[in-house]
Length: 102
Image (tube, rainbow, N blue to C red):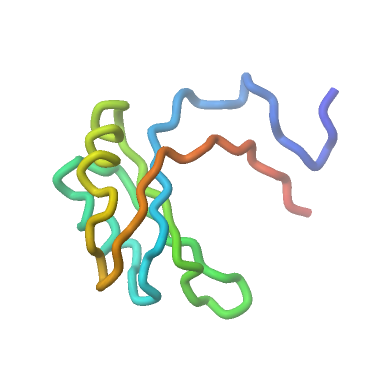
């Protein structure tokens, strides 16, 4: 039995995630510019993580891909590239189970 605040049931997962973590983003980077930067690798979506209180970027985000090859190519091709005046880091994102929020 799982705790009521933690959703870690493996049968609820929709399948493998092909997601990369992008770090060292400039404060001005938004989701559109992040997705556009990875456009040649076929991203399905992009998300820049923002602080809940200030609404300002926290300096990192995630880009999702349809398959493993696209994700691997993006990691190889974009790691260390310049985006918004900063050299970004790109690595495969770790899967984290979703937490329930009350």
